[in-house]
Image 1 (cartoon, rainbow, N blue to C red):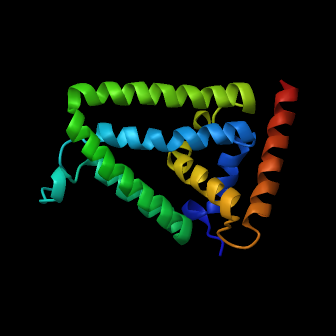
Image 2 (spheres, rainbow, N blue to C red):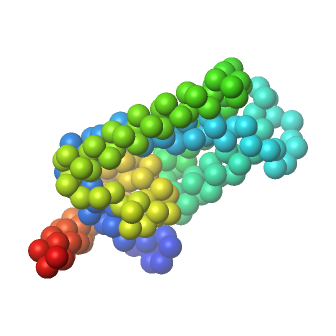
Length: 192
């Protein structure tokens, strides 16, 4: 069943998809988006504890946990099945990111995070510049691009590998919106 407003998956997916229609660019994003999430959570491990609760293995309820809960909850609201998978991946990234941060310590972790972020972001910008030939979505809608990127690549992967659709006709509807968006963008470029 299609949702509207903030939880309109079709609208979010078609916006993001219009910036990611080239198969090579999509593949690059599939490789690099989740490592960006993971390394961001490694860095966020060092943020202040929000709620002091004794958790096993040195896990803390900090901003990394808060972002994990927000992302996971949003994804589940968009689509229960794929969102649950994405939410689980968010929590796996938080747990293992926390373990890695503890092991490395801040003085090494921030360097690891910086190197990984630069490498992954560079790959994505190359994907857009060389293959997509369109600026990244984050230049037009920063929050939507950051929030949807992990879910987009997961849903794209689920569609490619097992033919998953949140509801019947989802991918056909999204493809029509993506094609219309790309056509409109190309026509606007011709006018410049």
